Image 1: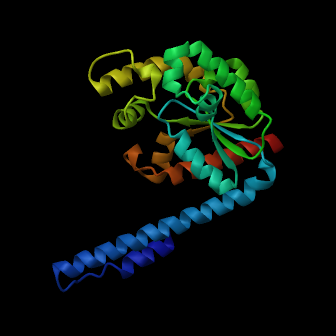
Image 2: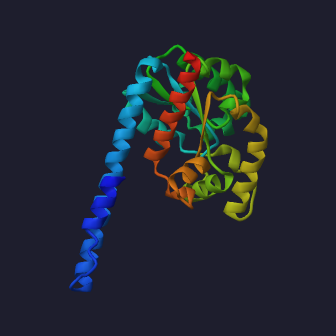
Image 3: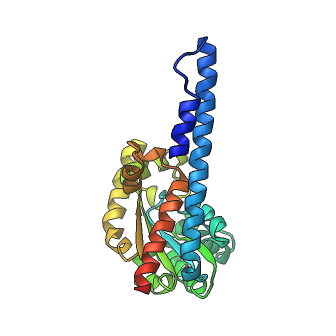
Length: 251
């Protein structure tokens, strides 16, 4: 942060000769600021990897959370940082069911059939090492699934329902089979259905080894809006929580 203060001081003189020069200096300062934050994040990631690497020892990381919580995005970044492979459990289920999309599996065979296939996939994944696994939002409701997932490290991505609803409205509900049964204004409808799912699943999410709260990250970073948090910042917090969990195991 001291480097950042110095850079901003250098690139923000008290006097400018013209409005155009002021704009140029502001753009340069922003570019320097961004680069400083990036370097700082890289150092934090390197530091965490040095601490957790020997203790993680190839254990799989299972990301759990509500639909739209960012499990895939976070998982892909995390897998690259750890040198792990990335696995989306829903994609594996689609492969098992002859390439049929998740939404169509629900339509053709029902949720019970889907959950059975989900458990089969998680059972097979539990014997693997060196993978970051993004699970479906409802994977946590089957107790047997926890038996398989907790062979690795389970991380709950905790995102406020309001933020989830906004994200899903933006990307659409075509791939969200549990959000198709109600008419009305998109945000209100999605928020209502997410609230119902949360009541059914919230207790199950507490079984995860660690929790990564976007609200807590926002407070820590001084953000007033959760939407300003970057995926990399979430990944850094995931690494912090993994370190805390592994330290607890060793104590």
